[in-house]
Length: 67
Image (cartoon, rainbow, N blue to C red; front, top):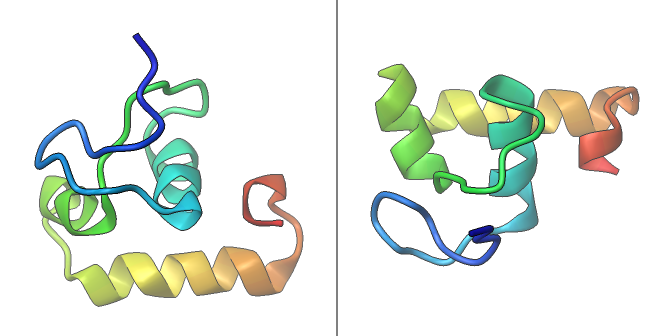
Protein backbone atom coordinates (compact mmCIF):
# COMPACT_ATOMS: atom_id res chain seq x y z
CA UNK A 1 0.00 0.00 0.00
CA UNK A 2 1.29 3.45 -0.88
CA UNK A 3 2.46 5.61 1.99
CA UNK A 4 3.24 9.19 1.04
CA UNK A 5 2.98 10.54 4.60
CA UNK A 6 5.50 8.78 6.83
CA UNK A 7 9.01 7.34 6.63
CA UNK A 8 8.96 3.57 6.18
CA UNK A 9 11.79 3.18 8.72
CA UNK A 10 11.19 5.65 11.55
CA UNK A 11 7.63 6.82 10.94
CA UNK A 12 8.42 10.55 10.85
CA UNK A 13 6.40 12.83 8.60
CA UNK A 14 7.71 13.15 5.05
CA UNK A 15 8.31 16.40 3.20
CA UNK A 16 7.90 16.86 -0.54
CA UNK A 17 11.70 17.14 -0.81
CA UNK A 18 12.18 13.82 1.02
CA UNK A 19 9.86 12.07 -1.42
CA UNK A 20 11.50 13.72 -4.44
CA UNK A 21 15.09 12.94 -3.42
CA UNK A 22 14.17 9.35 -2.59
CA UNK A 23 12.65 8.96 -6.05
CA UNK A 24 15.70 10.60 -7.65
CA UNK A 25 18.32 8.56 -5.79
CA UNK A 26 16.62 5.22 -5.14
CA UNK A 27 13.67 4.39 -7.37
CA UNK A 28 11.58 6.72 -9.50
CA UNK A 29 8.44 4.57 -9.13
CA UNK A 30 8.63 4.19 -5.35
CA UNK A 31 5.48 4.28 -3.27
CA UNK A 32 7.18 4.01 0.14
CA UNK A 33 9.89 6.43 1.22
CA UNK A 34 12.61 7.25 3.75
CA UNK A 35 12.87 10.63 5.43
CA UNK A 36 16.05 12.61 4.76
CA UNK A 37 17.90 11.46 7.92
CA UNK A 38 17.05 7.79 7.23
CA UNK A 39 18.03 8.21 3.57
CA UNK A 40 21.37 9.66 4.65
CA UNK A 41 21.87 6.67 6.95
CA UNK A 42 20.93 4.30 4.12
CA UNK A 43 23.64 5.82 1.88
CA UNK A 44 26.05 6.26 4.82
CA UNK A 45 26.45 10.01 4.22
CA UNK A 46 25.75 13.15 6.24
CA UNK A 47 22.29 14.74 6.08
CA UNK A 48 23.98 17.88 4.73
CA UNK A 49 25.05 15.93 1.61
CA UNK A 50 21.45 14.92 0.89
CA UNK A 51 20.32 18.51 1.47
CA UNK A 52 23.05 19.75 -0.91
CA UNK A 53 21.76 17.42 -3.63
CA UNK A 54 18.22 18.71 -3.09
CA UNK A 55 19.47 22.30 -3.49
CA UNK A 56 21.43 21.34 -6.60
CA UNK A 57 18.45 19.70 -8.32
CA UNK A 58 16.09 22.52 -7.30
CA UNK A 59 18.47 25.25 -8.54
CA UNK A 60 19.33 23.44 -11.78
CA UNK A 61 15.69 23.56 -12.84
CA UNK A 62 16.11 20.42 -14.96
CA UNK A 63 14.61 17.82 -12.63
CA UNK A 64 10.81 17.74 -12.68
CA UNK A 65 10.74 16.15 -9.21
CA UNK A 66 11.92 19.42 -7.63
CA UNK A 67 9.62 21.94 -9.30
